[in-house]
Length: 122
Image 1 (spheres, rainbow, N blue to C red):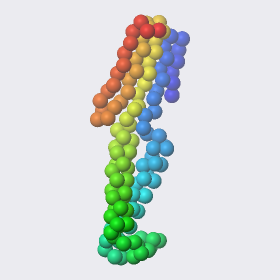
Image 2: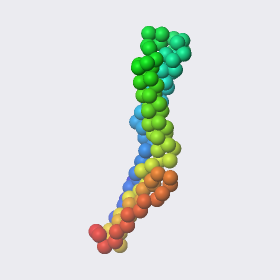
Image 3: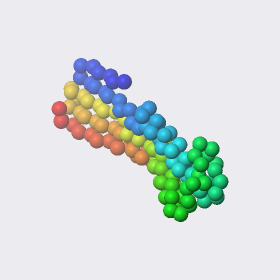
Image 4: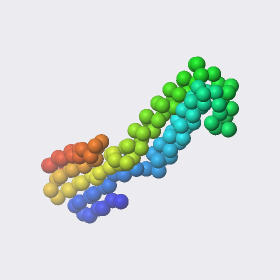
């Protein structure tokens, strides 16, 4: 949503709460959980997921690699969910032609507010 008058223009910035980010975080979470379950089931020698028979996968080296990729995916997915929950990158741009002011406000990680302010710029 933007607001514009003759002299003032305010433009809102969406940030990280986009549908595509939700989709990628959810897909990455499910995929990494699948890798972790296959790695654990290859270690234990029984199949937890009936779709994939894991008795054919040896724990060394395939099961270890699958578990490593699953844990790496879980870390990346948790990072994505944290940036979505904090809405990193959201903010607004403020332009005032009459006063010659430009203000860019953005929300960073851990709620740090990043403000760039310039006057007599326009």
